[in-house]
Image 1 (cartoon, chains in turn cyan, yellow, orange, blue):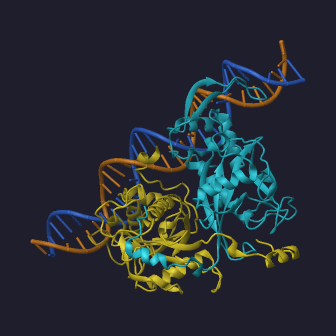
Image 2 (image 1 turned 90 degrees about the horizontal axis):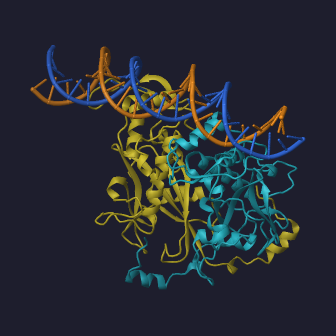
Length: 274
Length: 274
DNA sequence: TATGTTCTTCTCATATCGAGATGAACTCAT
DNA sequence: ATGAGTTCATCTCGATATGAGAAGAACATA
C-alpha cells in the first residue's frame, strides 16, 4: 500500500529527527467480552503499579513502536497484552477463535497522569474461556460480571461500586458494550460467543445476556433459521435436554454470512432514538 | 473521568521519563465528504513536501501532544488541520455545521517512511462548501469527485488513476466511504449534507450520491415521512420547480431523531452479505 | 408417575417494503 | 401560447417481516 520512498526521499529521511516532535506514547487496551453463567463478563486486571495502583483496568499496555524492540502492528499488540497480563495463550487454541476488532482511540490530554498517551482500544468476543492468570504488570486478573460494575449511560461508574476502573476505562468499556449490542443486530458475531457447535437456545442466551432483556423464544427461533447464512444445521442433536427439562435441542454451527439480512433488531430501541 | 494522582503517584511522576518509550508520533487525517453537482466529493490536498511530495492526500498532520505547544484533544486537531490546510474557517460559519466522528486508527509499521506514525482518522459530513485554499504544508487543495479516484473494494486505487493518494490514504478513504454508506441507513446524517432547509428530492439525491444507485422516488418519500423525527415540515415550499420541470417541492428541516427506526436500508446489499 | 420446563412449529393480525400507476405542477423548446 | 417531457406527491397491491400467543412433544426433577 505504501510505496517505497524515492531516492529524493532517502536524503530527506537521513536528516529526519523523530525527537523533533512532541513526546507521546501509544497504548492498546482490550475490552474482552465473554458469556459466563448466562451473563456478560469482561476481562479485567488489577494494576500492580502506579498510576492507579490497586484499581482495576482493561488489559493493555504500550505498543512496541520500533525503537529498541521490533515494531509490531496494533492488533498484534492487543493480542500480546492480552496474553501477557492474563495468561490466555494466543497460540492456537484459546485465543485462536476470538473475534478482534478496533473499537476506537482515546487521547484526551490528562487521561493519563504520566504523559500524553493515545490509547487504541480493541473489542474482543470470545467463547467461554478459562480463568485468567495474572502476569506482567498485573497484580490480579479476573472475569468480572459487567452488571456489577455499575456503569451508567454516560460512561461513569455509580458511586459505591466495589471494582473501580482506572483511567477512562469505564468510558471505553461503555463504548465497547454499546458496539457489541449493535453488532449483534446486523452481524452473526453472536456465534463468536459460542463454541464450534451450539443450539438456538444457547444463541438466544447470548443475545439476552448482551442486550439485557428476554426475547420471544419462538420468534427468535424462526428469525435465526430464516436469515440466510446465519447458522447451518449439523444434523445432530444435543445429548442432554435443558437443565430444567425440555426436549434435546438441535445443534448448529456458524454459517457463511457476514451480515444478517434482514437484521435482528432489539425490541427496546424506542427509548434511545431521540 | 481520570482522578487526580494521589500523593504517592506524584512522587512516581517526578521520576518518570517519557523518553524511555519508543519514539512514535500521532497524526490526525480527515475524510471530509460533501455533495457537489449531485456527486460525492472528498477534500484532498497536494503534498508540498516529502514524503510523497506532489501526490494527493487527506488533510491532516501531527497532533500537538503537549511538549512545546499546548496539548490539544484529537477532534480539535482534526478541525485545526482542516482549517490550516484548506482555509475552511472553523469559526462559526463554514465548519460550524459539519458533523465530525472518529473513523479509525491506522498504525501499521511502515505506513510512513519517516518513523512509526499512528494516525487517527476522522470522518466529516458537510453541506456544500466553498472551494478550499491551500495553506500550511499543502501545495494545493481541492474537492475531488470520489468516483474519479478509482477506488477498489480492497482499498487500493486502480492503475491509471490520475490522482494517486499518498500513504495508506486510499484505504482510509475506502473505510470512510463504507462508514458513510452504512451511517446513512440507520441515522439521519444525510441531513448533515444538506443546508438548514431542504426538500425530499434533495435528501434523496444525497442518498443516491453516497450509495451510488438510484432510489424509488415514491417509496423514498413515503419512508422519510414515516420515520418519526427524521424530518419536520417548515410549511414552506421551494420557490422554484426542478431544473427539468415538476412542481415546487416542499421544504423540510432535520428532525430530532438520532436513529432512524425503522432503518432505511440500501437495496443492493444482497451481494455483500456473504 | 406427576408436574413443570423447554424446544419447535403454527397461526393470525399488523407493519413494512418493492414495484408500479396516477394526476397535478412545473420547465423548456418550439 | 402551446405542447412535450419531467418531477412531486400520493395511492394501490402483492409479497414479506414482525410481534404475540398457542400447542404438542420431549425432557428433568421430585
